[in-house]
Structures are given as C-alpha cells and as structure tokens.
Image 1 (cartoon, rainbow, N blue to C red):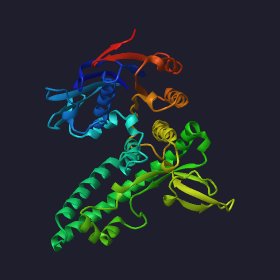
Image 2: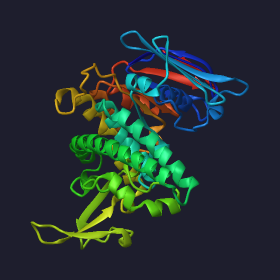
Image 3: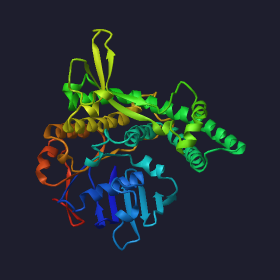
Image 4: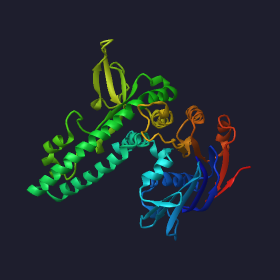
Length: 402
C-alpha cells in the first residue's frame, strides 16, 4: 500500500505530497489535475502513462523531467523519473534498477477509467494485456519468457521487412529464431491458459452481480494466436512466403486474444451482425444456439458493465492465489497490495453498478484512488469505508478535507 506519494512536474502537478489511506477520493473540476494524480501512480507502476506514451506530452512545460516517488509498506521506496528524451531512471529502495518489471511487481495497479471502455471494439492488444497483467503477477516464469519471445519476434520482423527473398545464411538464422520462438511460445501459452482457466469462475461471479440477466449467456474464451496442437516453428515455416510478402509475422503469442461471447437460442433476434454469428446445437435441448461476439449485441451501457466485470474479477483471483497451491508463485513472496485507480467512474456507470463496484473493492485488501467531479459520491463511499481520505484538487494543488 502507498503510504506517501510525491509527484513533481507532471502536467499541472508542480509539487504534490500526500499521505493516502486505504480509500482516497480526489474531488476537482475538469482540468484540475485529479486524473494526472492517478496517471502518476500508473506511471510509477507500469513505466508508461495511460494517456500518452511520449513523456514530453506529460512532463510539465519548461521542465526537463517528471518524477514520481512513493513509500510503500514495509518501508520500501519506489521512484521513477521520465525525461523529455524518454530516458528513464528507476529506483527501488534508493538503488537504481534497470527493469520496469521490478517496480511493477512491487506496485500492481488496476485501472478502470473511461478510456478503457472501448476495449471490446478495439484491437486485441488491450484484451491481451488484460490477461497478461494477471499472468505477470501470478506466474514468476512468465515475464522472462515474454521478454525473450518479444526480442526474437522483433529480430524476425526486422528481417521480414528488409527482404522479400532470403539467402541461405539468413534462412538458417531465421530457422533458429523460429525454434526459439516456438519454445517460448509453448511456455507463454501454458502460463496464459492456466491463469485464464482460474480467472473464468471469478468472471462469471462478477457478471452475475453486474449483468445478472445475462449470466447464462455470456462466456469468456481465450485464443492463443496460433494452433497450439502444432509446434509454432513448423507453422511459421509453412507461412514464410506470405510473411515475407507482408513483412511481419502473422501468428504467435503476440496475436493472442480474449473474446466475450453471447449465446442465445436461434429464435432470439437481438444480434446486430448476423454475418459474424454462428450457430451451435445445444446437446441437451437439441435447439440451435446463436454464438456471437458480445460487443455486437450489448448496448453501450451493458458493455461498460461487461468491461468493469472483466477488470473487477481479476482482483479476487489475484488476492486469493495464495490459497491455491497450483497457482501460487514458486518464490512464495508476500503479495503486494494492489492499487485500484478509478477515474471519474460516475461518468460511465450507473448508481447500482457503482455500488457493486465499491462493495466489492471494500471487501478486498486493496488500496483505492478514485476521482470525482463533485462530492455527491461521498455518502456512497462512506457506506463502505469507515475512514476514507478526501482530497480537493484545484489547479494542480491538492488539499486534504478535514
């Protein structure tokens, strides 16, 4: 849990110093800096902003760098400094470290904000990252495999972009890379599949709370990005000519995806895109069942609840993993307290959904930072937290409400 947070020169936050509690509410008008405070925590944890990837866009005007420093429980300290040229300095306990994953492991953050409410319609990257966030924090061996896979993939794609025809030497080099990719891919898939299967019941529980009318119709599936019954290097070899023509690698772990499906009887006419729908037969009733992407069927409001369920269902799994010997990390370290960032959530969810969200979070050992335009949310928060801290943000300056 963050016990003290210091932010310097990030957007309109010149100097911010606060001592947060388990639940923290930041009240302020648009442009006051409340989202920037959440952005700073996310930056410290992930090494990047959820608003813009270029540091010069969030470093304060006329400043060379932005810095975020936090004291977390057990007297540990984390710090990140981002410079305008994208140079990054990371510190753990006053010692420089060279891998962002070290800080990420110490400070797991889960973001629920309006910008994430379109992930069902976007490309696969945001949905894949949703699963990988869980796998990273639950499986110690995942990240080294992922890094090694990405390095080989970058080399392979670079060669594919440069050449339409390969020499014997280049072909031999590519075959070696493909063999390495295949080895890493098998392990990455194993980790992802294991965590995905563990995640499913938590997702179902969350759907039952947020979208109870559709609890029997919504389901989650994982696509590995390639045919896992055949070694990846064999498939890459079969597709080499097409990859050379396109200039990139079309299959592999980097194309994995999470899908949310809607299943209903064939007589229902709710699907909006029948071209992408398929029919299955229910073995017990022998009736046709329509299988469709949930994004093509649900309303805007329902999709918001679905995405909230996807994110919210990850926390109980992450926090209960210590009770599951099959999923526990091999190093058996004390798991860090997750930090949940809720940015102006009242703009995207109705009152009932907000109550379910708050009630769930209040029952979990996590730290919450949420922003709001007004104090109207405070009575609801006071129902679930006995001593929340309320901060007011105005023109980049923050003050604690007594």
